[in-house]
Length: 563
Image (tube, rainbow, N blue to C red; front, top):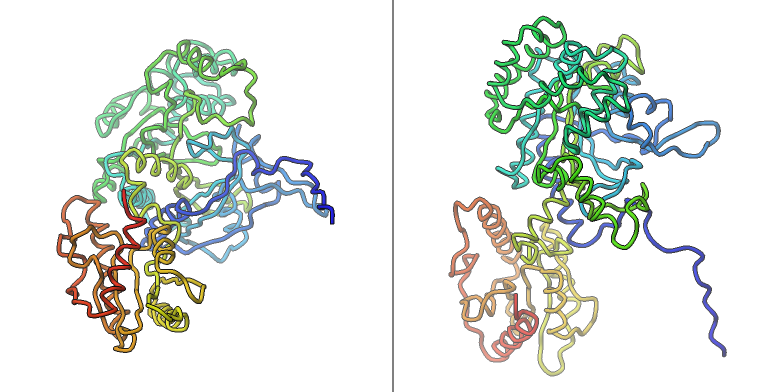
């Protein structure tokens, strides 16, 4: 019969720009980030909220300033104009407005959001990405207390992610910004647009920001120069003292209120023992329209563009951008949809950001009186930086990192001539381990070669094997073998334990291995030593069992060289 002709697809099979598939070890690493963050959220008393992935267009419009153009609009669905959610904050405010019986709440959400931003996939800048949000809503205490707790949560998250000493939390206050703009002479109708320009100082040099203010937004040049005197100021309590001594600022009601808030906030941050992580930065503006008080964002190496980090002036940065962008085509041929991972003018950006938004709920429910403050963590950017660091520090080759599954035990069997594969027995052992909450797998084949079973375990970096043998099974015993032990190790060939003690012994060994991994990251204690990770001592094998152990070790070595 003639072969059936296959029709070619009429389109290129790929994911949309700015999106990706997640699988294997990447998913496990991302899930660990989720778990770390959500555990801290719950420790602070938050409940989880899940809202629709799309909202009515009217709910989202008007809340994001110049970024509103990045919202994905959907086609008309039965008369309802809808858009994909841009963040998790506005949907939370909409939910509060619809549930008026709630007077105060701590809420967290972990979900995808969508922005038609310029993608830079290698730097975690996506069009579909996860955010992890924590917010405190309602009149539940005195000023700045909730703000301080949110910033304490920021510190807890990054310390627990292993970022100690490698991140900075920039803080500012919208009232201070608005006040200094008024003091400098910015017209009221231009304050929001000038604030958006100042917010670009983490991406552009002052010369470029000033040009935008004057040439594009029509601000007087002398006013822009006055703004520069303020927005270049950074520090801690010393900066706060300097602002308090500024008669012009203290004579402005907005600036004075913001300065008083910041003074109180720094005291509370000191009480929470996180003040040393904070950096008071008057250039931080946060372009979103709904912020009303304290604002903050978390930065790390790679947050700023390479061209700006090198302290180049605007002209040289532009030249470098042109040189790097050409690659055989004109720089201006790069469109808004093209990936810019290799563009030195684009950095990772902030990895978390937030602030106080006291009037957002009122946009949906007038006179709602529902002040809010919160933080949003950009998981994809955190993932991108974490993985890059691990790669630079040669951590990606460690079994705990390269694992594509969370399987802890691979159950296998070995026998001599006439061996039937012991499939029912392997299934029974797996059932016992599953009942005990231990993650286990086995081969579906009735008769699977021992080497193939070891290869399956090694490919997924499974830390332990449980090996069944006919003689051991008759004696009610199985062997536990820790994978990857060096030749000459006393437990290289495994240890025998009774089947009844198997779950408990595995749990003990897994707990010890986990503790060694956690403590090892701190560099304070090494739990594992040359004597092995468990308390069981090796037992001599007799007869055919000894041959099975030797064969198992040989099979493992076949895939273990170079580990």
